Length: 162
Length: 191
Image (cartoon, rainbow over all chains, first blue to last red; front, side):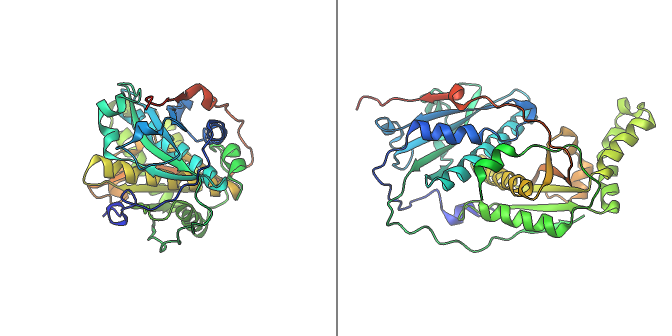
């Protein structure tokens, strides 16, 4: 059983972003560390689409409101096995980015909404036929008054010995 | 924890020392990796660890079976088979990570992404303890023999096998492309 649907983290939430804008340079600085993710054959299959101050309206109706968005795009190889490796590598990069953002008090909400699977929708952002969106990161700085979310219960961990 | 440093310093390790990797340590690192992943985004996965000589032999045998069955490879000299077998049995630990697939593509992707995130966390916390990791994604591991060995159910998929061990030599860095070269900024619709 998957737990995502139950936790509903992709659903309604109540984040309060501050007015502080997310600078392109700051995101690039974090990404330049995040690109040290392991990736097969050093293909570095990812690329990034950024929407910051003045352009966030592009995401209206598709994403929750946020001061900035980062779209993670992966190139899709013909070879299905490579395709899977590249998706995994981009997920590693994304995880690096989230860890770094957390260290820098930049709040990141990872989303994989249904529209990212819609070619026409993705195409409007310039995503090519041989590419796909892995995830959209909503980013911003939180109001200082907001309490950090309480840590959830420790999830199960199944660890078997062969 | 200083992730800036760890993320940039981490390397995939291919040459391991022979000293054993305690399952307790592997479990602790997995826990840390899981905790580092954002709460509220639980991932559905399980792990199988082969860290004893006997379990490594069984793993090696299963890895070799498709090769032996394959007619083309049958002609390979014993030496080559031994090389492959030894490669598996000499590495102190092998951790198979198995993810659950969801009812649709989106849910499967979400869970797969979460499991990959946890696996990246594992590589980072392992690096902080000087434990080397190689994330094996070779097509060779996607075999019926291995699926049987790990008792995989139809709705499960093998994300990868981590080869684990301590190491002496740190491999050189392979430079990465700057993010600026893969960067597009979208401007507003004029509204």
